[in-house]
Image (tube, rainbow, N blue to C red; front, top):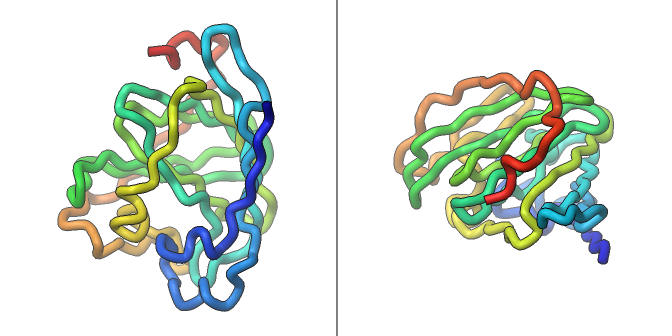
Length: 189
């Protein structure tokens, strides 16, 4: 069964950089998610997300971001537009690793086990991504909400540190996958 839901600015108000701005347009539709568009016999589920263009005050539009139980990977492909994926491995209020990946249409990334991730739309055009993940995997927002976002915010003037984390490693850039994997067996635990 396909489930769809909008995420409004009011849903992201506590995790964006410009929190004052969140009060000005709480009904702004930041993104829409369709879950369960496809299912595979091996237990994988395919979802799609459409992220609006524009700005959230001084910050680029993004997904709320989440983590999965530590044993799950997620494969994410850019279907339309350009994306910046921000991934971090954290233990409570300490971030052990944090990096970003720029990707364009046809490119993909893997969110590793134990990492939280968010998708940012840095362009003035709509961004569409597709994801494959174990159907039984659930998203957890607790740590991201507790720390009012990821370790860094992408703003018009560049990356800004989130001071709600005790330690914050230097942000680095990684590359997307060279090609979309033909076999998705590696996603199964």
